[in-house]
Image 1: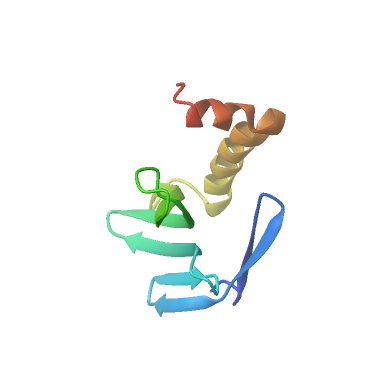
Image 2: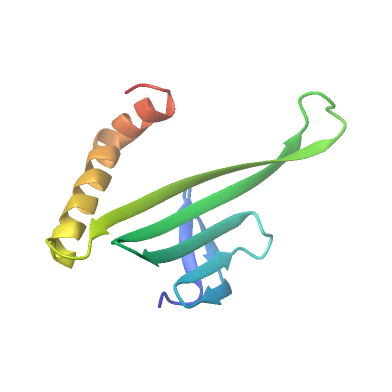
Length: 119
């Protein structure tokens, strides 16, 4: 079980995420203002499927009606899908570490390209 609260730093600003939900194979965390959320879940079928999802909402002027505000949402997800046999937890972690390192290398140059639509 993750610690309660979780903390996430977005653009240099730390946000506390107290636990808001808990199930047998999942947990949810949310900032006090409700704008930042984290969700962790596990599925156990023929394979293991692990999900960590970080979501953020933003309230800003509506492009069509500038006198009104609108809420926009985005999320980033990491899904780890692995068989029940054949790989150790350490080997699964090696692959996760490799992907995260590749995406964050050179000040995030590769993830910036992905966000820009390159492949």
